[in-house]
Image 1 (cartoon, helix red, strand yellow):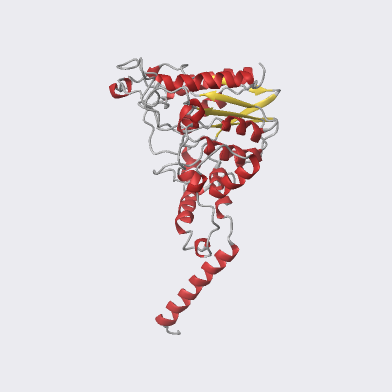
Image 2: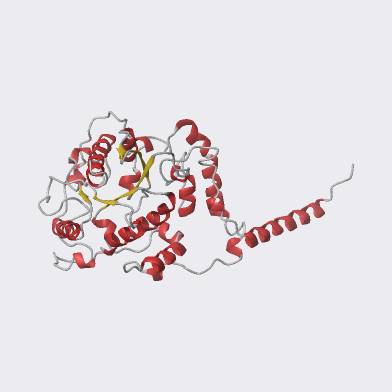
Length: 373
């Protein structure tokens, strides 16, 4: 038996490793588009998000879609509807089956003689540009209708979050295609990746997360949940909102406005409402002014909740109603439609029972405004 030379073995290993990195960088494969979901494993019913036992933090939009059930072929006689939004749509603190979107699918609705299937494309960030990126990518999947749930905070000017930074190149292309409303584009990195950044070493973190996402497919297939725990069972009693959520500060300043201002609405990025219609084209879109917790405690005459003073939200609310009427836009206004006792300690997050109520409201709005029933 030939004796192994450790020095020679070490040198060969280094050379193979270097060669593998060079080859990978030269090939530059779209690894984020590879997925065992919708092939070996069923697709996830919502995007992977957060750290925990059954999910990972993924920000690349192609990787998100590759793991999602929407990437599976459209079934015969399917009326495909995507629902966009923030953590209130994604379902913070909820199992995927407890969200309003999962509840919507339990109604077994039909539209124009086809079977309706709703897809949860929510992602936990209140950012209109993030929703436009998701919408633009979703249009590749034969959509029949779109529901976009948003609120005042969605349209507030803000710097890019990690999701937007990870998809800067797509933002550049989206801006070229649709001339997006103003945004601090200078805070995004549009430079082309260096050769090193394309190597296995340069992409090691992203590749590790993608690999972990694939390994979690077996757990998802076996138990159909994507979070470690659910804080409430579907039949749990309603919650009493905590006092620190109900009692509010008397300060009326908001953002850069020290006092109530008639110019507040003009500071919002309202053009994204038009951008959404431009992206969807002939595909119908239902805009939803999402429900929120409304305080009844101290200073509730000045603030609706910890997120909004009344003067700011009222200006926003009046605008979206008048704008929808002027442009014949389908708008479902749910801002005060759900009782405060169904919220869970956050301005926009609902208990499982609250999600059931929201699903009923979305169902009625969808049937009347999209299907004409």
